[in-house]
Length: 104
Image (cartoon, rainbow, N blue to C red):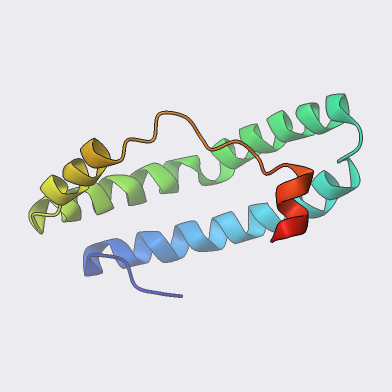
């Protein structure tokens, strides 16, 4: 696994990566098998989101705060804000259409 932006954040990154990977393995396979039933998939996604918060939420918040502090200490916060101002992400991009999938 890669190191974090700041050496102080690397232990938190490793802990979070480990937690996320374990959670994601348990999420992926059932989510794929439920892909045709929208209601079941939505209920499953909510359950897994709650599980993620319970298992990984605290370490994610600690890691995020550590990285945000490092970004400020390294003077990168202005660059991040400039990028957000120049190219704001107001909405997530729409999913690709079937036509776009075939043309890729």
